[in-house]
Length: 341
Image 1 (cartoon, rainbow, N blue to C red):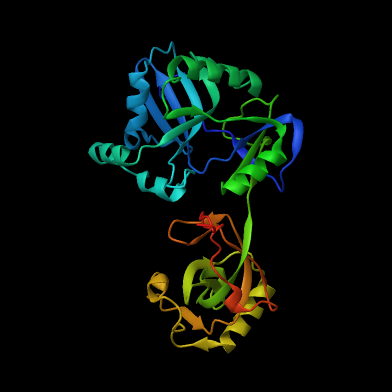
Image 2 (tube, rainbow, N blue to C red):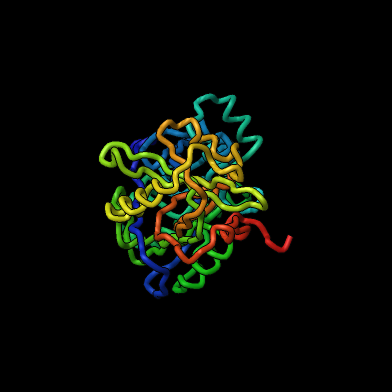
């Protein structure tokens, strides 16, 4: 196996709900960038899940590994995730995305100095030139822990993913309370299957729901041409309506036709005066955007808010005919704020 040979990472299937099982252990689902760390003969390389060499973009790890010694005999390949902690002490994908696609070494060094990342390791594919993917997860974890203890024990940037044995529901409840993305369940007897989306690994995502005001819509494109593209959503923030993004999934044809008919009846030329204009700037220039009176309330599922108070991974659920639009207010707990402060 060559020093820079790439093995595509093993992938998890999507699970419906958290569970307990003695056949699995459970880890937090890190909201970061999946990478493979390749080490051999003084060289350090980082590869994305698609096989792109991203080493230059994250110089803190190359420097970190080299400073702790790279006397690996043969090739060692470790699986992990690069994360960047936000002000709330949780992984912040939006902040991390500023580090993506950096090809300038000097720019990468400046970004690393301003906002250094962490590397969370959770598996070992190759150790000292030996392919250990056919060994059970428990054995691979022992190898990973030995490698970490030998080379990264004193490095706060390179850490091991914490595991919880058997009790997935409790961990899921904890990460949900913290505002993290979810958990990953891994069968302890499973082998590592490069490039395979296996049921031996199951990701269970935290899904949040809230009610939002429809303040407009965009026209559909392609297969949706002439129909509904997405709903533009808002929430009351003090005395203003703040746009929180849009939702374009979760509809079937019947729902889209019904919504479009309802919205067409309350369409207006300009956004309601209560809507903060700056918050809709990304939609305003769109010539196919339509604005409506802020009368319709819909329930939307989503993973979290971005730092700019936009919905992440939204999906439409239903219309709330029983809810007053005035009751749709930004929930500080969803946005990572302490409502008591």
